[in-house]
Length: 471
Image 1 (cartoon, rainbow, N blue to C red):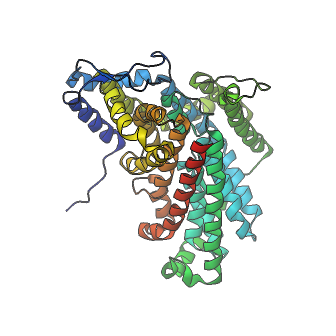
Image 2 (tube, rainbow, N blue to C red):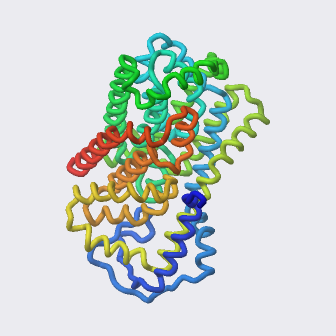
């Protein structure tokens, strides 16, 4: 018998579109009255739900829904594509690779301190731009370094995968998780940034302590390693290689590029924080949205390309190449938005909201926040695309928060935290399975090693959500 394969996110989303279209023939249609029907953040007025005539969706509606979804989400899709181009230019300069390689070579002989420093650097990449696939390049560099220092392959994998992964879990301004979710929830990406920063700091600290304790235990007694039976095999395999020279040198030019890279995200944070809404009048609120953020990353990509001396052809080709890498994400946004198009056209979106109002509004705001987080964990396994999950669920889950008196940024934090924790272990992730394959670390042993940290992270996240609701 052939091995059963999980269908792609596209297939799952298309199947959901078909199922939702069928439901428009079965589920009663209805509508709420909204505070402002034309606003990006549509707030339903509790108790105003009423029945309307059914608008049954047919085959043509199913076919057209991803197209209409792409039209509705064009600002988000363009933002994703331009971010891809920006990252393509930055990665072409070699600045990020050179920076981490320099840290690694500088700390050789003090490998113990490489663990927190590198995990923090990878975490900053995860929380700012969703660093994931980019980490694959660092396994060949760090595996020989850690194994030569008396650690095992699990330590090296943990530094990279958990460092960046917990950063993504605590996404402060990650455009692919927080940004897209905020867009479809109708709130600024800056709202809730304090709570997400709390999760990032505490979560990354917990991960660092977890990894350092394991690493020290293994260094003192190699038999404590979960891959102790592969100890000699791994030493022969990884120590025979010298991949360090493959990484570019950290020149003055690349240092400047790293500064420009960081400044870009700082400007982004400043542009999206609604200072007026939190009572700060001394600092101007720019009220930036996807249009302004897209322009920011476009201009920054050009400046970084010019500083790197890429020249017109290399700059454009690296931008286009980076944009091409994220075209799939942009298409997923359109396809998943098609589900909302069918639900809205079939007038069953508000029926689902009404069901949620009747069942969840009375559970209390704390219980709602925790249940939302727990709900997103299995949903993240089903739809591994963070952007697709955000586009699919936020039009429903964000207004449900209104009924339960839970701020929409809390719903966003619950979603991204659940998605982030699943992406540390999901077997459908090329980042997880690719990293484990390079390290020759069996998947079942990774689960046996990391499950205690997952429990700790879940407790941290749930506690943070409760704090966010209460305060």
